[in-house]
Length: 213
Figure 1 (cartoon, rainbow, N blue to C red):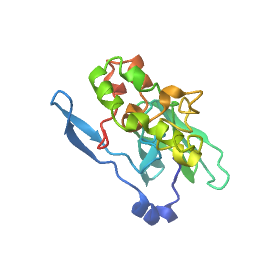
Figure 2 (figure 1 turned 30 degrees about the vertical axis):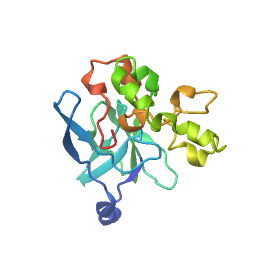
Figure 3 (figure 1 turned 90 degrees about the horizontal axis):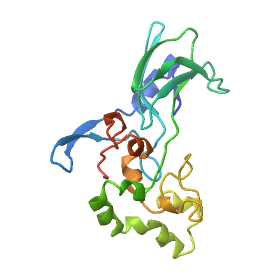
Figure 4 (figure 1 turned 30 degrees about the horizontal axis):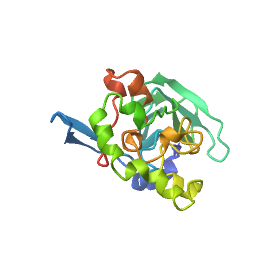
């Protein structure tokens, strides 16, 4: 998500910026886990793209904070918001905040991230069998079929809330091409699961726990 930095817009930004809230929830084993509260909303579940939620300027430095699901991240800036020419600022990093020395004035910022990797509930079920079995008996598992029943399974206006990752790299394309991503699945509420599936013991790759999940 892009974020303007012009001081003249500071008051407007203060009113519009959403803050990241964290609380705790009990995991399956009864241990407290961080609750992930998304900044803003996205059709079909968690937005896999980074969203800047704080921006402060002091002297020649800019401090950004953002929310994201798929590290690593790269901050970029442009001297013009009307016709952006993006320049990388600082290095690639895994964290979700950065204080940057900006050599020239920047009008707008964004944070880029690795493309999300969606794998589908069947892949999640290889390890989470009981949860997968329970999910498979819910209406969420058959959400795409509810559209097919009324001939709306190719309607882009409806699909976003009935499938996984519509419009994203590796996300749902069609029932014919990506049947494994049909329905409301694990990754709608926990975020893209590919990194976790490939690195199951890496705590930095753990799926998010949200109110919806």
